[in-house]
Length: 186
Image 1 (cartoon, rainbow, N blue to C red):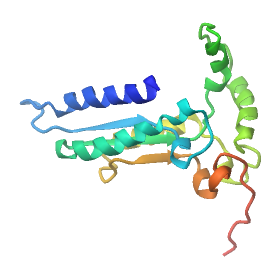
Image 2 (cartoon, rainbow, N blue to C red; image 1 turned 90 degrees about the vertical axis):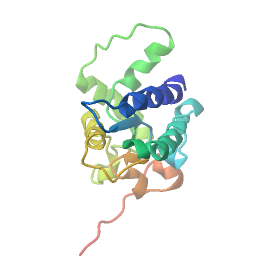
Image 3 (tube, helix red, strand yellow; image 1 turned 180 degrees about the vertical axis):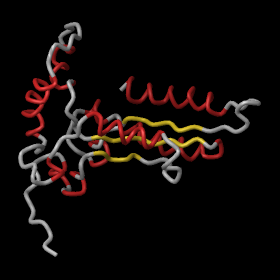
């Protein structure tokens, strides 16, 4: 919780102070702050309480977006679903105090993560776009877009980056297996 909530709070507190400062070189305050949230915090999905505590970040995003709008500062969040990253394959080592040394290849990480993702219903049938896990670069692209001046009309939002899984299912199935559906025939 200290990383997700306290870290987000401090970044917003001190980052926005710097963005609000004006000078002869910067006559108008301006900025974009992007917070990393989790898609599971938006749908009540099962996860441990510390993980779901990131939901507090979503409230900070909404509150600060309103409070900072007069300073021309936007605040948004990226809420990714499980991505193909090494955290699942290295977190067990961190829990027992082993020094972090990633010696696995990208292929090994993908293979080890595949079993974990199957528990979320991901990757079982990639016929359906929502049954895939995102690559880290895909999540980064969403954050880069939000940090740019392109989405000026977006403020105070948690943008879900889950390949459409949250709209393809509801309730418990938003993190569990999604039954195949027939595509529309036009």
